[in-house]
Image (cartoon, rainbow, N blue to C red; front, side):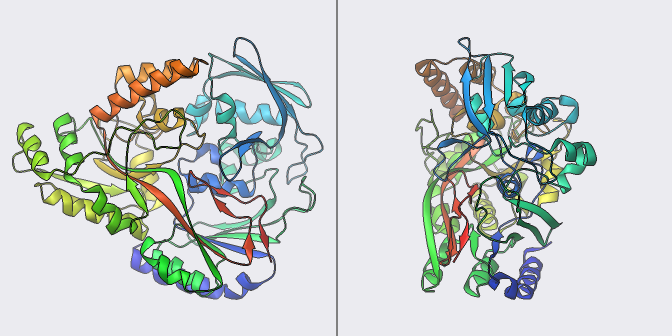
Length: 511
């Protein structure tokens, strides 16, 4: 759907449900993209995983500040050798379909994701699990193939949810994506991919007195101006992300509150290093010099971003500061000449998102690259196009991606999940999100060793060295770390954007 069409469509759609948004206890959240799936084990995007929290919970999770908390777990212990984790479960909890939550349900879910034949996108996060055992109804034991120090953090990742085993048997490995059944506060009602996803309060929720609202509706509103409009007309209660240039306008409306908070969301241009001209590191360095990050942040983010200071954003454990890359178009042209491209070259630049801010980013990048002789054809992909063209590419040699604007946040709060899914050679599509098809054996080795040590100093050394190598290899054009701008109706409380761009809404309430 073209942006201008989506704007009209979303406006009409939301106008039609204005009364519903005003109804007591019916919360409407405007989001910037469509969902790819309601199965978080098979999602690469933060939004789909965040919305899945409507229905699902994991053994552990994070609060709004990304502090690790137990959810369905009561307690946990680890063996002296770091290979066995024993987790005691909360009792008296049921899934939406009445199936009891127990250790067997946990086993079914992790057996599913660790089976490579199921080809789930989160396989790489959990593939180190050798065996999951239901010791008794309330005790589950994980045995790892090798020590994996951030294991509990990985269980807290929003993909690590417990799906009803009855529903999995009923709907199948793929069908569950359209029929979510979990232990969460809301029960699935309906999902129209481009229009809305609706869920209703589940009366059997184990947290007594929750949820405090009757329903929640997630509505994709791709166009940023339309997201502003639906907040101004009270057709939605919360919207994120918001266009930075509209902050002052939104702040004038007394019924709305703007929040700007630091993030661990990194934005970058991935370059396919298996393909010419990006196979040449001089070309990749040239592109990093060619784009003015300060100007980009002003144009696309209205100043609500800073130039990327490293491979892993500050705020993620074990991140180091390495930059930013300076703006030097003369040096960019000189490097291109050295690489054999004195007149530049032609390429394509795709965006993983089609919202307005993303389009501003790729348009700005296009203009900057043109100044050093690089002609880039740009296209903002819809969610389905993104999955088909980029995430699902089966053969690295024929993958069509060349340059790709995207972003990532480490939803485990640790450097492993900021590096391994994006930059380890094991993470080439369709397995994970290494859209650059980058491979450095030393980086691979350091990431693997860091996972296998519990020595924090050694882990810091390994991650530091890996980040330094990646920065030098430059498989990305390192762009920006965003500030998170959201707007809420003042009668809404308990809905938060987390530092990784996900959502926390356990205390959601409409007054």
